Length: 93
Image (tube, rainbow, N blue to C red):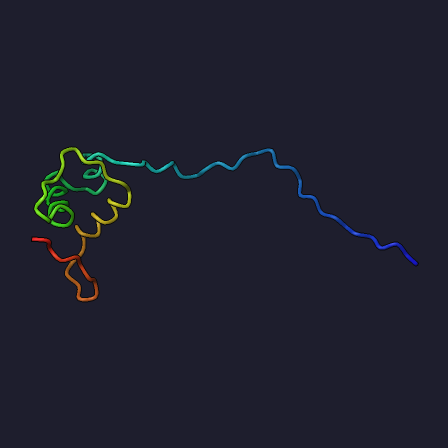
């Protein structure tokens, strides 16, 4: 009876580490940084925040910090036009 041969594969050792090609995202942005990255003035940023976030009668806090997700929403609100297929949150007056 012939012996059964098993071939094993061992990948070559890789000592090199992978480098991240994109710089790390900031965790938060100041109002000035957020406005600059969106190409808005501070007053336009404040209007967007007041119309879409702080619209329940509570005042907008001073010197808020925004995340990258916040910037995505702010850009959407700034660039969007009324669309029947997009359900917007009702104003909380």
